[in-house]
Image 1 (cartoon, helix red, strand yellow):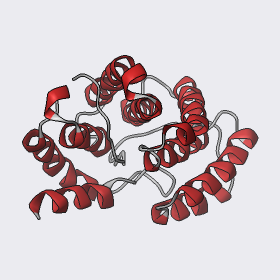
Image 2 (cartoon, rainbow, N blue to C red; image 1 turned 180 degrees about the vertical axis):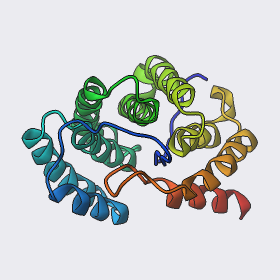
Image 3 (cartoon, rainbow, N blue to C red; image 1 turned 180 degrees about the horizontal axis):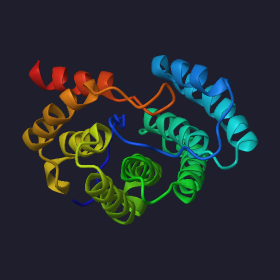
Length: 219
């Protein structure tokens, strides 16, 4: 698909696998993830990004700390999708920490890799909000590339499907969007959120937003 101008949020829900989250993070991480479950505003994501970044500094080999720092920045950037200048600090940090998480991820663990690839897609998408005309083509292609990688690594990753579905749904048809196709993908993603994550710190966001978009389409 070509330039797209909106994308909401989109857990890697993991069962029956052994994973390496790198060096063990401290006791703060589960509580921060729990707070992230309820975050909805730029201020909340910004605050959490700062706290996750402190964990990332303490536990430099833990991909989840870097991942969540990047995700919080990306999430804040998405909330500001119509105010490009304000996205700039968030988009830079989102990409920086997504790349750190990717460097820390064991490529043999496909479920983890799929999650980080999904974050890479989000980080690249925030560039478009700064200037769709200037950055749309380049970064929509990069974002699509990482969604494809995420789906290949784990075809049942609900976040990868969620990101793809909202992209199709909110993109104007002129630029490759397709609301019916997007809703179809979102409805495929929704039941996948019901799987239990491997532990309390693994990503589990996206169900609420997926339900909201489906409800919007039904109204």
